[in-house]
Length: 504
Image (tube, rainbow, N blue to C red; front, side, top):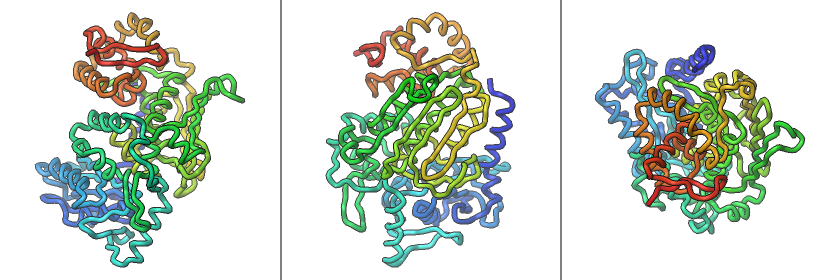
């Protein structure tokens, strides 16, 4: 069950990220207020464009310039959000398009809409005009010199935009783009990207672009890292690798090691499986839902390590599991030096296009929220809040494991599925079915979602499914037993390398 001390800490974090705190700061380089009671403001996309071109920021709709909360007509709120989403994906309004995710918030009995806009690695226009941001507001860039300086600034900041003119779809892992798009479709059935062709998807996601300064066009480093075959990535970036190490007994060398040189989509799955193999999980209720604390914490840690690495730097990324902590390191292009705390830093994306793919797949949260979630759940998971996120040329994070190894109620997951199925069936059936079936009324819906996921991703294994459906490993195992009992799926292959398939 949630810890009372943790609830106080959660309340503090939520306060720091609250609308009250944003309004208290007032308008500036990264904050904008706009009236929107009956209609969206005409200047909305000028501000969105300016934030994308500068350092990102937050727009509050329903708040006046003088910080008065006017609110939004409740009948308009959902339509406003839908219009913003559609317009942000329309290159006639915002070019290149950049999908936004506005949130409806209830604040002091009024409805406001919060729009978080990250800094983009591309130069954006709205209705043919380029806008930038200053502390005084939005301004249009009109001279060739101003526009040239913006392009040069973006090129120096975001290495993911580097174009590889001879990179083609034939250099991508077979089926990986379809798999990514299926996950997005499953996670967000009404996502605007779902109707796009692959070519339009690449362009809309910023993975295929034209360099206005040089005239070069083609797939970018972001596309290579997300989808590329091992040998192609190694050819272009020979220093690229990620080390995952277990150092519980042999701290000089390692007890287990995973050397990863594959694309980021597969690397994420491999790292999550490594964590599931060597770290325990435990029963935890959030409201009426059971969640996996381990997955909630380490999906953010791993996504952060992959999304924000500086890939022009040869320093290898690492994830090391010790007895009492987990440490990660990755090359970084620091925007400041020092420790990060929730609500006390201005988030800045290092690879916005890579980050956007992970976010749309449900593998990461918007900037700043990931750090908040790690602080939120760490106390309940390990009994400690001694978390470190340190921004420097080498980004460093440390997650405590103080209480995990000592707690006998924790159940270790992520072992061989073929062996676990038989061992866990009798014990888990009585305990988990009784607890979870009474708590979760949406079991059938979850089973159907799992069946569709396996159909779209043949050969998947439990850790991969748990991460992508954001469910505890034990819940996935229980649903799998039901699908097997009903004759709908089967496990093919060896216990360590096989996976689940829909029966034909």
